[in-house]
Image 1: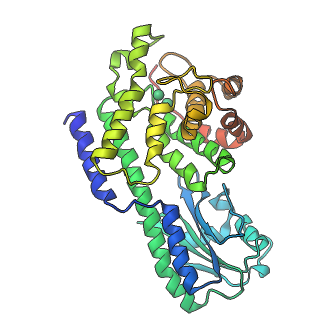
Image 2: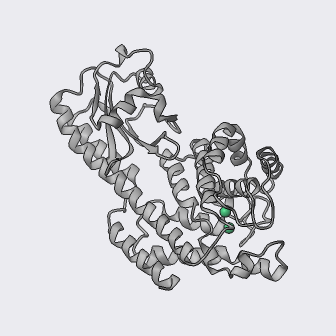
Image 3: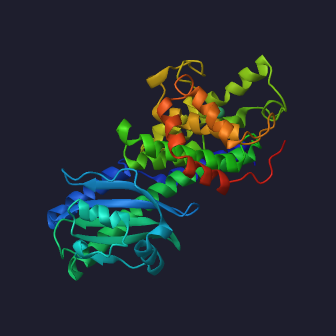
Length: 386
Ligand SMILES: [Fe+2]
Ligand SMILES: [Fe+2]
């Protein structure tokens, strides 16, 4: 099977899965369902979804629909194991009803305490599962006590199931897109300049940065999740780069460098083709894939490629991925260089901050050093070819 065959086969199956169901984003769909629920139960003023990252065992807010006047809980993230009540829901698969949040034990989670501080007095939590895997949690919150009676809960379980399906399907489609393209890359023997561990790490660094700077750039929490999912595809265009260049030990000459740089153009063509030919244009946030692929080598001072864009002209997600990608490239071994220490990698991105890299993205990495180190430790290269 050729690369083109396998890629087309995957794309066709992605299109079948995607169908026409992705016209609106998950946020829009949750907001619409909230509007309907609100008509029937006016006291339910907030619906939110938090996702679970099984690799890191962490929970993070994904989408939320809040009535006006309710401050959103942006970028909230915690270890699942630090919230026993949610862990119990995950293990039992059962809904949890809290009908008087003013009587919570002091040991309860940050999330429950936040709810109470916001003036919520009752809450319903449902696990979102796919097969036996925990995907996340769905929260319904109300300002009054005792809102979640047996009848209301029975009714909301149906809505909960629907929201769970919407989230599951959206994530499954994007994950299939990402997984399929990664597989196609492997068929094409795009080897160890970009190891699997590099993609695992840089995608998580990108998510941390997106979560940190998203709110001040007008982005909601689903933005960080999409940056995470799509960032692993930043170099899909390397399929088109010959091995003699891709795997060359040592520096490239000018002609080879120009050929290597073509990977962003090839990548964009692949992304465009899969999006346009196979009906994925309606998948929410799909532009993010294009932006990341084409612009992850642009630099703030205009010294990057392919277009020499400056500053804000570079899409935010590409500025985020550039920082995550450069940081990980420094901190891990490549065919042409040994790994730098984390200290030196942090120092180098700090030096590049404001000139080549977007300063807030570098600052976010520095601010979250503990989390960055946890990712670095968790995803080590199995066998880097030197
Ligand atoms: Fe690249
Ligand atoms: Fe990379």
